[in-house]
Amino acid sequence: MLTITMKSFAALFALFILGGCSSSASVQLTGDFPKVLAKPKPLSAAVVFEPSFATYIAQPNAKTVIDMGAAQVRLLRNAFAGLFGRLEFVGSREEITIDNAMVIIPSVREVQVSTPSENYQNVFEVWIKYNLDLESTAGESIDSWFMPAYGKTPDAFMASKSDAIEQAAISALRDAGAKLTLDFYRIPSVNNWVTEEQERARQASLQQSDKSEVSP
Amino acid sequence: MSPTNKLIPVLFGVFLAGCSATTTIDEYRPTGEAIELNVAEQVVILGRRDAGHYETDREFVDCVASKMRGADIGILPEQEFIDAIYPWFEPRTAPKGLSRLKRLMQDTSIKAEVSKRAVRYLVWLDGSTETLDSSGSMSCAVGPGGGGCFGFAKWDKLSVYEAIVWDLQDLTEKGRVRVDSEGTSYLIGAVAPIPFLSPVKDDACSSLGNQLKSFFSITPTTQ
Image (cartoon, rainbow over the protein chains, first blue to last red):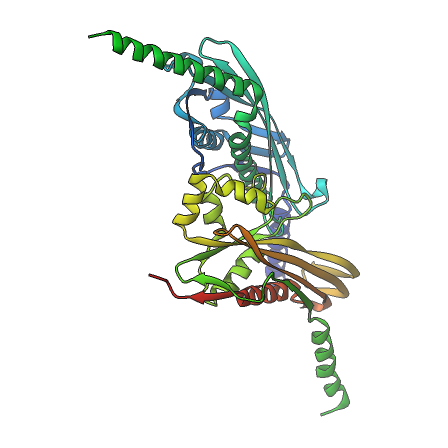
């Protein structure tokens, strides 16, 4: 009787140890991101979250799956709210209703994951490579901006692989928000578009005031 | 008591003494005066996370914060501050020097958020705990008849942390504290593994927390 109990215990113990050594990870990124503390410019933009982006599931390698579509949409909604005063989020280009806006179509080029066994450090790392296609409402291309983001776990000690990759991916998404806020208006073509748009708005405002002066 | 029975506590005492950590504290302050902190004002302790090969862990930041909280110093939780001021204190964007901090504080929305939370001082913690050297070996086995560990292992750990205090009102540096803590831990396998761990990180946290506490002098609210 005692032998059977010990055998059962040994089998359970072995299963527990092997379970802990499981090397596959399936992660769904939940939770919200903080609002961006930035003063938006008085400009308009339409952000197109295509279904392939909004439901994006990354598979950086055969053993890792990261469901990040909804999380990256939440993050970019917050980040763009800190850049543009007037915003529209749509699922396709055809749904855009605002005029004189910059049309932004984000897409994911690649997601990479690095584990402690690969980087010889006690951290998990995640790289997300975004591409932002920037166009005018008329469909003319303004630029295609490559935006890489990076995140790592503070310390992978005692953390499961799934938890560690989730932390690193959230950190990478926060980094994407930081890079967007910091660098978006530094892109030369975007800067040119902003100047043109401000000039166009100024001319429109002058014409408007001229009309109001002429009319009785 | 037989000589063998006397030897066991002596050996145990020697082992425990070997597990203690050696800690050195270096402090720099422009003036010898304590930093004045109003009871209504808060301090935020932030970990540096921009280095490639290490990052100041949150556990250490929380430990130093709890030591300072014990001295009635108002501490704003790190994540709450970082989220409130997102994205300006992320690893990519956090100011590394006072000149960058001055530029950040020129932004009215950032300054308003700092004022709203009554954050007067910012303490940057930078450092890590690393295993320097390890030796020995330990083997464990488990079978239907039982299990056990046999062997001996030891490792040296070094904690190096630096704290820099910034005044968010004057936008100046108020002081620095550097702590080096070193110690050796042992693991003896005599059927059950018996650890004798050197509290290197805990010592570094206590020393840094206590030293930082002594920086501040709490003053009552002025009407």
